[in-house]
Length: 77
Image (tube, rainbow, N blue to C red; front, side, top):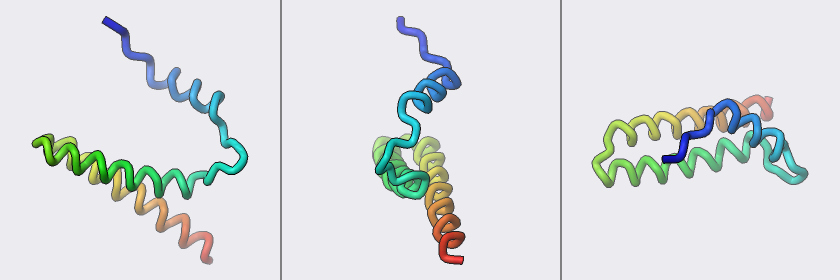
């Protein structure tokens, strides 16, 4: 059985490997993308009767959408 990687080690590896490449949309684009992706996952979870997971994914979607709104409001000010 394969051991799960440590989340802290995994995220550090991703940061050093990926960074912010030129042309990356940055945090605004990431938050918009995540809002859509999490919405799709929530739909799948609910379709398969995974109600608690669907709820948690809905909360993640709301958080991502709030981030998008707040960042847009700051830029508009």
